[in-house]
Image (tube, rainbow, N blue to C red; front, side):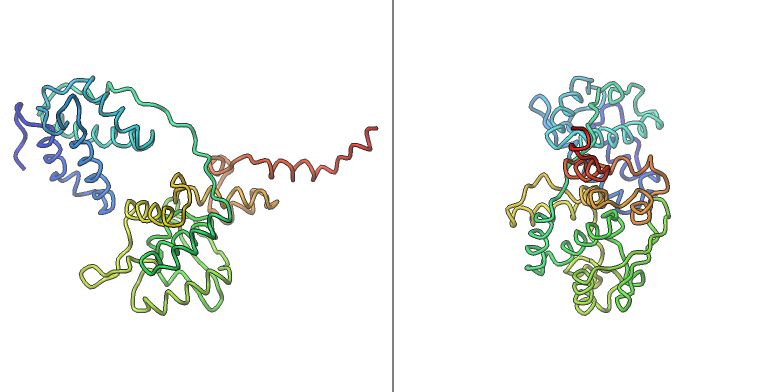
Length: 305
């Protein structure tokens, strides 16, 4: 790949990175994710001009700050992630002496508050009814169903394979991808019925919840962004808040277990967490949970009268 010149545009700098050996070493899903965000970066309009069309030498901190403010419309997390991806591409060019200045590093980012959104049980049931009612969304419904029922990460559910399931014993045996924790979970009757139907329809395929249309003759897993878009489509169809996301399902499951009186040791058996500190981000204080905790103390106002 030809090294960009001093007169090169940001688009050319980004193309230089996306064709590099460093980029090729990334996983396929990460490459797709980066490509989407790098394209969004280049198409961001700053002072009447797409950022990708700027010569990299002319890009100032103010340009990138304006772009960052634009990205915030998609949320703090997206804006920070996009800046991080741009920084990776920019530093790659710096290592090849394309430029010496780094305005990306000077852009101030915002710290997002921990997300506390929960799905209600009615919202989950409405979502599943809508998704299962249209074959286009069958696999998306299953991914949400499994993530919610088992309190697992959507990333593990989207690539779940049939060999991890025993539909006779209604049991899941999974090694999680993030921490290599092993979890052994029962499958509820409703979920087990849907899985049996899915296996009948996709019995020659490796993945439990693949794309419903084959690519190059194979039913492959959805990537993360596809899942987000399709879940949003189902939410709209079901007249549910589009603020709900797949990432909220694990937090919802943990909160429901806490409200049901399950102790942390039991919850960690389900989620695969190895210490209390790592499970804290998934814990949400609720009125229902606090009411049950106070009731469990057995206090009675009459005792103090």
